[in-house]
Amino acid sequence: MKKHSAWERLFLAVDSLASGEGAILTRLETVYVSHILALNENEFQDEKTRILFSNIVKPIKEGKLKKGQLSDLTNEEARQISKNIVSLFVSINEQTEYL
Image (cartoon, rainbow, N blue to C red; front, side, top):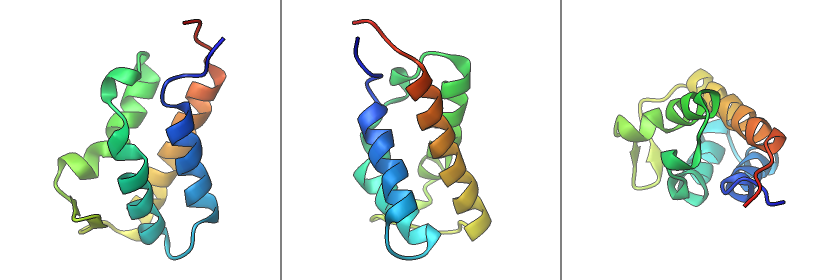
C-alpha cells in the first residue's frame, strides 16, 4: 500500500502554510515554488481533486506568479487557495492506492 504520488508534496505544503513565517501571501509564494510547481495535473484522477488542483494553479496559469512572487492576488484569494491546498491534501490522504 502506497500513498498518493502527490501526498508528500502536499503534506509539506500544508506544513509550510501552517508553520511558515510571514504573511499568507509570502507563505503561499514559498509553497508554490517549493511544492506546487512540482505537481502535475495528471496526478489527480477523480473530479474533486482535479478541480481543487485546477483552482490552486489558476494564479500560475494566469501569470500571477513571476520570479517566485505573486502579483495581483488579495489576501482573501491567498487564504482561499491555502484552504484548497489543505482540502486537496485531505482528499488524497483519504485515498489509498495499491501500486
